[in-house]
Each structure stands twice: as C-alpha cells, then as structure tokens.
Length: 326
Image (spheres, one colour):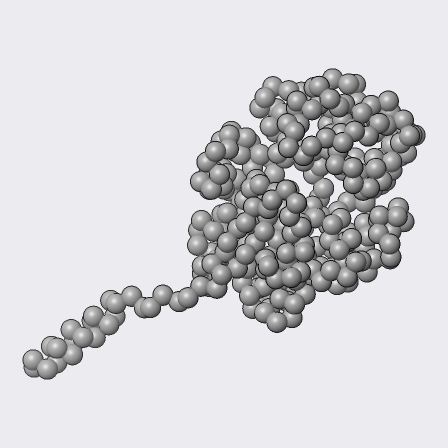
C-alpha cells in the first residue's frame, strides 16, 4: 500500500510539473517607419502571445533614416519587413529576391493635402508648391492626376522638404501641397484643429492604378527553405490584424502599450479610421490580386519608373494566408 501511495504521489507530481519551455526561434521584422496604426496587428499579435504560440520570438525593429528594408530582407539580416508595392516593383525588376506575403491595407489611403489654398481637384495643383522627397514616382503620380483634370504638371513647383519636418508647419509656412496618409496625418490635423483639403488618390484610380501600401514582405530564400517559418509568422500576423479590424478600440490600447509616448487620442482615432481598411472588400486579411500588382507595374514601366517590363507572378503570394495554407 505504501508503494502504491509513493507511485501515486510521483505520478501526480509529474502531471502538475510544467513541461520544459520550448525554445522560440528569433525572427526580425523591420518596420518601414516608426510604429503607427499601419502596424497595429503586429503589436496585437505580440501582446496576445500569438507569435509565441507559433514558436516565434518576434523582434520588431524601427528603421533608421537611411534603412533599406528590402535589402535587409533580401540578405536575411531581417527575415520580414514592411514595405510598399512601388518599392517592391522596382526591387523585383532589379533582381532583388523579395516577395510580398500579405497586403496590410487593401486600397491606397493616401492623398494630397493643403490648407486654405482652394484646392479641390488635381487641376488646382497648378501654380502651387508641392513639398516632397523628390522621388520620380511623385512627379509621375501628380502628372497623371493633373492631366486627368486637364491640368499641366509644368505649372506645379516642386520643393524638397526634410522628412522630419512637421507636416502642418510645412503646409502653413513653406509649401502648398503635401502627400499624406490620411489615417495618421489627416487625423492628426483634425485633432490639432487644422482643416485640411485633401485630394484623395482613390478619386484618381482611373489615372493612377490602385496599389498595395503597405505590405508584409519576406525573401524568396526563406520561402524556399523555411516555408514553415513563413507560414507561422504570417498566421500570427493575420490573427493580429483580424483582431484589430474587429476590435479597433482594444487594438488601439494595445498599440499604446508599446508606444506610450504617443498622443492616445491620435492613436484611438487613427485606429478607428483605419481598421475597416485592413480587409475592406477582400475575402480576408492579407489577400492580394495579380491584377493590382500587374496593372501598377505596367503603369510604372510605361512612365519610365522601372527599366524593364514587370512580371507580377513572383512578386507576391497568397499561399501562406490562413485558409489557403492550412
């Protein structure tokens, strides 16, 4: 009887002893910019332990001013990154082996903002000063938007402004027009009591094709050698964004835990505005259409923004999205 009691105690102890912790695999994800509501799903998945459930120790890195996220991903210095379709298209044509594995926002939510200049359409850009980074794609987009309304790009003055300059200050003192993401900068202006006039890109998709911005990217090498790892990261990320889409209030509070220095009202209002755009009219979060990639790539080639025709077939994949990848 004593022997059975001892055995029972040993068995009970084994049952209630925690199993050894499984070692997590360290994975680096490089953001495109400082954390904002474009990234909320990542922080939701981190906070809820969904990466850990997939065996991942995700390290989120904020880039420096000159960081080339796609180069880091292509050389495995970061396994994943946040980028944009226009940059990915150029990189693919140049032979950089990177692949988009999820669209974070389904439709372009950017636009061109002004303050009190009477700008209501792209033709009204004539005679104004546009402040930007000087990238060729800026001029091409503005040209086609203006021409769609009968405007002339030669009547728009281009002014280089530092990326660190406060947008509202720039629009009030130095320039007439700036390219913004409404879900962050537009909401910020509202909270500061500044009334922006914004000509949104989605009003001109007939002139400049819609494109995915931002996107989650990885490398061809990681897909070929570690599809299990890619699937694990994508699955956890999708869970995070699906939660943020359905629960913007809680998602905003989670993001604020990671960036407590941010204005809480900006984060909450931005999240409320952006959450519906994560999935929008797509069948589920992350979905990408071949037509969207090819049409915008063709447009870039026709406008001399890339040096060779673009083939969308290898630029993106939906295969790791839950429901398609099992």
